[in-house]
Image (cartoon, rainbow, N blue to C red):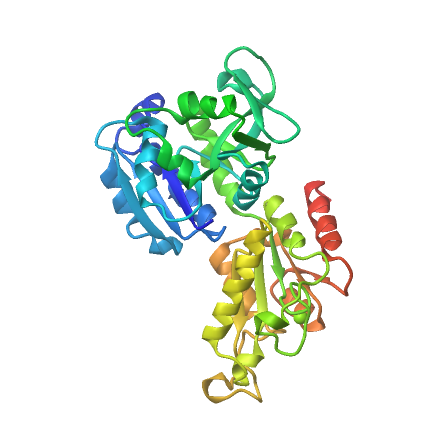
Length: 403
Ligand SMILES: [Mg+2]
């Protein structure tokens, strides 16, 4: 899944004066608007083409996002000339899509869930759309959702239930061919398209327990100004590659030599599902020695990323050191600050991703990984073989329990 639509054209009627000059997605939460958090969160899942479905205050959204390069994505624009509703907006945007699956997110809220897990749910159920669900204290307000054990949504119950319940969290994975079949013109996903899918058993849903907010009212906007910047400082698992992600054969750089370590790639998915960042930090002296080029390393990394995505998993980034202090060729002969046990790669990743260092850690299979972790102020976990998903499960459960 390489494409997303952000519904960024909504009128902010309930925000009153707050929204007079800014659409909801550009409301400031701390030092940046909600849209920055959304684009960051989408991009880190490996989604590289993002269609901004705009209407009201289109110019403000376009001048903020530009070509998308600040987030490492290609930004495209689908502009309504009259209000089309959420259904009409995605139908209009569909003409810009090329892939089979597309992530759709509301531009006035944020659910922290593994978007690639939602894509797996759609495929597994054969549904046209898979919807992220979240539990709220008052489900009647937005309509309680009933899901059967197979993951299919059976009903939306508006205003007929009271108390806790599951509601639409505003993030979906849809089949692009389904979007193309939607009628052009004004319609609503929530009131028209989704109820129609329920009637034919083609809407799937899954509950996610990660962070959720919407900024639909002045009260929830005020809360989000505190909670969203706090959410953004995530725990991060820094992962060595050779001997942690894949079996460490000498200078592995070819697809035919790649084998997962036991428990991979599920261990990465566990981190994704738990709301952790997962960042690979790896010495690649094979580049210094001339065994393979940085371009070949990049292509190999992209291939690994593709295998992870098939399993509903992703790494947020891969940082590598191409140097060697004695065996490097040409410019790669360097006593650098990035080759572990030096902490340079970790320090760069921390500066660029701004995780909560106190809750973060490094998993490696060598003493040099532990030395690099310590030098960067991180807890080190020495992995010595066995099922790494059990190691990771212990880490995320310990963190969730606040131990
Ligand atoms: Mg290693």
